[in-house]
Image (cartoon, rainbow, N blue to C red):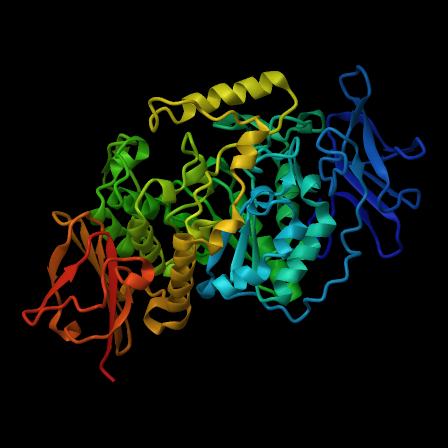
Length: 619
């Protein structure tokens, strides 16, 4: 089946005449019918060949409940199954599908051209815990807050339908369906439209490396999975084995749908290192090719950002240079080095990182490991980044994984001092990379973000509990693991919006606003040219000095990660330079009355756990 970028070609869709067009890939079926649940009407689909079944009918309308009746090739009982390309599972992952006209929404964002990649300041959020109500409509009530903070793009953790009402979203079993408990597809369209009206881009997290366990009936239709590879979360998706053509089209269609029909600006593709594909053209490259075709058709730019645990520039290299063409990638190594600077115990994967030395390297090279031996991996790892701009890399001091994958889900605010929080935030926003913050970080939220699910299968629930206890044993040697199934675990993970008016939380929020404003407005800090960066580590003092420049303008940032006051020599050119930011000032709840830290001899005194940024220009 050829992909038509102008419209969705699989599942149930409504054409310009209001008729339902249904196309299902089910090569394991001898016969397929669609059941209109409302009045028990059954309509047969026609075999189109290559495993596809088709029907065009005026008997199905938007909001009708429907399901497929499949007669297996192997015989046996008829299977009743929801549409694997369903847009709406109104009754949840175990219910029938609900017909939804994705083109009926009246968009008002015709003038929206998106946010330039270089200008992204990303705010990652989880719909269920971002607000008390935990849905798309309530996110809309916080958009003005996010704009005032300085955010230019929100990144929403996965919304593909999962089992139950509580989940991080990475257990989705209907990749095209928008989670019913969040408000469903119409509410998501409304949210995206509202974001664009206020100048906010929307990034959506999608999962193309596995499908969740509960409500997953893909194998009843066709060869969606392969035994050639394995993932930590379930069967590997079949991108290069027998029958893979239709599977590849399924996920290409999915990416195009989010861009075209929901006006999403960028997709963040989860853990692409777990996508196994030895085809002539990698599935990521094929998704990129079709995305560019859609962009040419609509006149809008669409971005593909990947989570990647491989320091392999191939993923972000342009396709003309034999890469996959991804627009950007998350850089966990920046985070790991930063956390070790801040005092993170060097266990698990943190054992590979050497604090300020490695953070300086990440400032210069993005990747820390570029071919040297990794003790944690027990092999040489990574490759150098060549010409890639800083806009190719997303960095952070926290994200949902790095918080939630701790046994207790502790945020940085409960692990380090108030002063260190300010230093870590500045490290992100002073980098030549795209900054991302995790919801609540900006006011030093203390509520944890813990791992939660709401499965109905007791055996699965128990397996998740056991897996949770063992998976992160390298990080925690004692204590009780929160029960992922418990409602209380989910409730504990909700943000406490009352904190933003309280003392230190209010100060931290103001500090983040200042940092983001500096990032957006200051020519040098906004510059993402990786060649205009010099970083020097002083490991014996746990200090880092970063210089950045553009034209005649230059800044120098002094990071003191230690718990003692430290003295460093300063470039004479900066001896009388004005201060852009001093985290040690009383206004930021620091110990210093004023920024007067430079001696006549050219020595600068840094308060413990502080950041000082100076600026000069030759003009």
